[in-house]
Image (cartoon, rainbow, N blue to C red; front, top):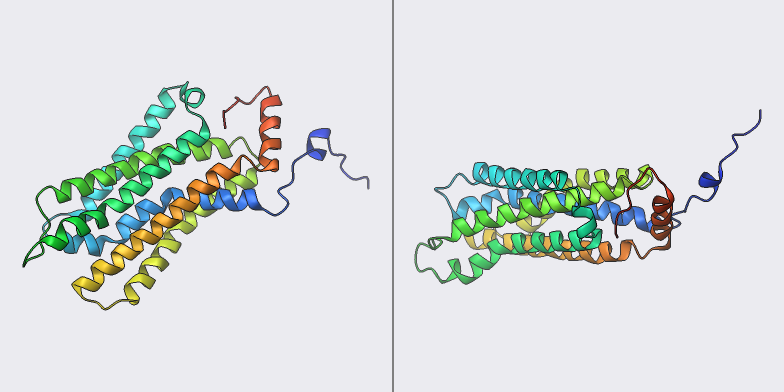
Length: 240
């Protein structure tokens, strides 16, 4: 039985030798949902800071609404991918993620720690926290839409890496939360300290995502895929 003859396109298909591009797509996929998972997993911390607020309900509505809004804008504005290249959108989105993730500990350090007696957060702290969740949702719509749109023009294993990363994000964040809580005493001070450490580690992971995003399209395998996409008349030509 004769073997299947591969066309020139299959023969010249770029190889991701050390799976670096695959790993980066996995990391970016995990980073897309990491901030939201981090915020919602630390609900005990926010419930301690704002005991009279419906944290889970408000966070969910704020996040989902803003994320859907960005996706609608991206779908409606056909020239957005020409005006803003992929790396700019990803870098801007991950910077928004970092800001949203660090708002809570900064508020705690700057304001709540200086409160005398009750330790209650000052007026406006809850509104700022909810605003940070809205920023997180905006960033998720921007980063998620850009990443999936970019991976869709690549071979299927890269889309698989993105979704595998998003699927594993919740597990990784939950493990991180368990470790940070278990490492400190179960007291109000221990809860706040473990939450601060938890958000800082999450921020470090997001910084790694920014570095990986800027490295991604400098890889030879991604440059070859980019050239193949440009030569394909059926595909649009994204700017990386």
